[in-house]
Image (cartoon, rainbow, N blue to C red; front, top):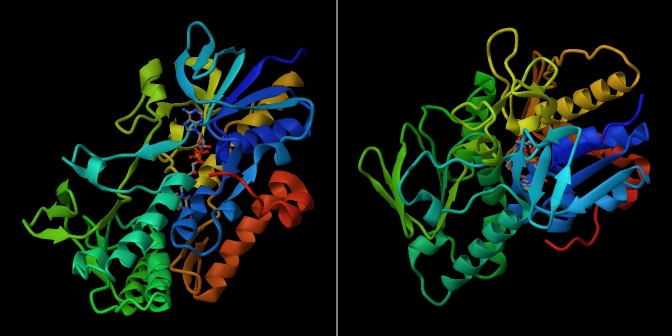
Length: 395
Ligand SMILES: Cc1cc2nc3c(=O)[nH]c(=O)nc-3n(C[C@H](O)[C@H](O)[C@H](O)COP(=O)(O)OP(=O)(O)OC[C@H]3O[C@@H](n4cnc5c(N)ncnc54)[C@H](O)[C@@H]3O)c2cc1C
């Protein structure tokens, strides 16, 4: 069967999984991505918290997509014309026979006034760099102007992103203060969450353990409180209380890339486009939608959450179905296999849930590091794992 023209949008976990699998079988494709690198979004909290250099969290696309059949383009997608089978980007127009949309998500602000304008988010390496630079500069300003609000950091949203980020900051910032001779009396980390417990969806024992560990390290949990508005250096809570801080970070929710809604796909209230059991758009079988962009409903009636492991499995599965199509075989329905989750609470402690088993402390972190090594091996083999995991990429 002749090769169809395959266009992949986005080099995140879903797009890369599809690309790597197609490359392995010498199937030609073009991949369009905003950056010339793939970054490890699930580790962004480490980058923001100064654990390692930013470059450790990205890998150049050219180091992974090395075959003649793989074509990576640095460009930004602007719109998709479903009927015309073409994609407009900042620098041109691309046509396709088969389209794979894997553009990931952006922060959702739920129409809270002032939140977007007055908070940092953690979606990209640029964001991680902004958070780190801002906190360091603000903390240093305390030396000349000792305003307690300079040493106060408030994070809104205690899902995986907010919890992992505050865990990282609880470890890093005391060291930063000490190494710059800044008195820590006014230092305060706060995690605001609308529910009664942090880490929704995670095993109850682990939720409690994570909350205890954060509190032991001085994090103040502000629970059962919704942020109703934000202004410069302050947020107002549902109870009427106001929290003032020079650093506000919002990690309370995500929604799919708006390009999908604008293109006219059938979407849910988070902008995720509805797909069938083969991950094809319900609006056009030539379009596959994967990862955070995809609204996939399991046989239980529940839709899959936007996570890295869902994205990776979807990308891998759809490319296998494209290979089956080339062999004139029937496609196979997608089934998600939950491999568990690991939440790090800084570089020395974590909690993990794998099947019916739970782990805590260093064991959980070893699991997380093992996952990263396995992922790098899968992306590009030992060459990527040992030689390319830390390189110079402009961020
Ligand atoms: C701090 C943090 C911690 C997390 N921890 C975990 C975890 O422990 N486990 C877990 O399973 N999940 C975790 N997640 C969620 C996980 O990272 C996402 O669900 C996952 O990255 C989604 O993969 P994706 O391929 O759909 O999108 P992404 O990985 O977001 O990839 C989208 C790609 O598209 C590119 N792009 C976007 N817009 C355009 C455009 N207009 N034109 C061109 N390119 C574009 C982006 O640059 C990016 O390369 C975490 C997320 C964060 C932020």
